[in-house]
Length: 371
Ligand SMILES: Nc1nc2c(ncn2[C@@H]2O[C@H](COP(=O)(O)OP(=O)(O)OP(=O)(O)O)[C@@H](O)[C@H]2O)c(=O)[nH]1
Ligand SMILES: [Mg+2]
Image (cartoon, rainbow, N blue to C red; front, side, top):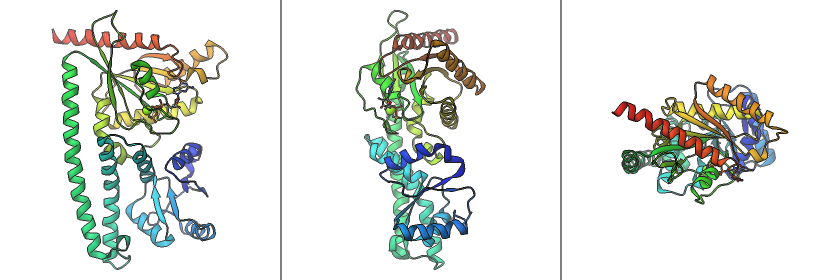
């Protein structure tokens, strides 16, 4: 497995991802610079050749995004299967995909990723530099290329249909004055555990990454005393650091649920150290920006309170304050910060109260504009 030097601090997360995809990294090699043609510089390439022969390695995983020519160069030089970061994540997604939409989105992302690789392969085999793709000969590759293009168009059509249906359902709920709250956050932060705790549903949760791939909406009746409006909670897919843009693109329809929501309930695993928390906050905000997030009101749930190593309440309020400062610096529109344990149902009443207050404010401001 090859990782960039700047990713060394995330090595535990990278190994966890690799294992989840079903691989056990035998050797981990850091690279500080890469070659535009073959990704690995000449010296590293020689070293890799030696390791591959010596340890009988059959797969090389590069935790980075490769250019098509780097792919074909590595396969040609090393004679092993090459996997990059996008392929690794998609493999995990494939294992967890339950709904038709998630299955289609993952296939679309995989095909969009493969298309330029095949194009490069065609180019090189026409130049006589490479044999046919998967040993198939020149015409077989051309055929495969066309087949993938047609399949992409078909998947896009079907996803568009699903997206329209989802939009119609959302609009219907919007007209009845329901406030939409999307639960967002880093993978494994406890979003689904919180969704289950607030809805009394039993969606799968788990310690592995990307347990949730399909958003699930559910209306809850938590504001009965304050005003007569329902809140629709939406559980969403978790993010990771430097989520490749191709994957964000593939999940655009799902991420629209976030863009179209009124309030964001941002779940943060507060049992991690502050630097890890900052990294996770940045990763989430970056994805939100890339899907057109425009300063929606946010309620921050500092989750896993039961695992936090806090001697007294002072350190908890310090942590809340640090996170508040950090998010404000990043221009987040914070409505409230609530420390909770979704797993042990701690402070969920306070969180519900906050949700109702945010919903009430939104309704009031909407009324001001409408009438
Ligand atoms: N101790 C403790 N564990 C929690 C808490 N909330 C969630 N967990 C655990 O954290 C793990 C991840 O929880 P999920 O709810 O699946 O997390 P998620 O954010 O939905 O994850 P993805 O869908 O993969 O993005 C599970 O093992 C949960 O049991 C909590 O408050 N305390
Ligand atoms: Mg989940």
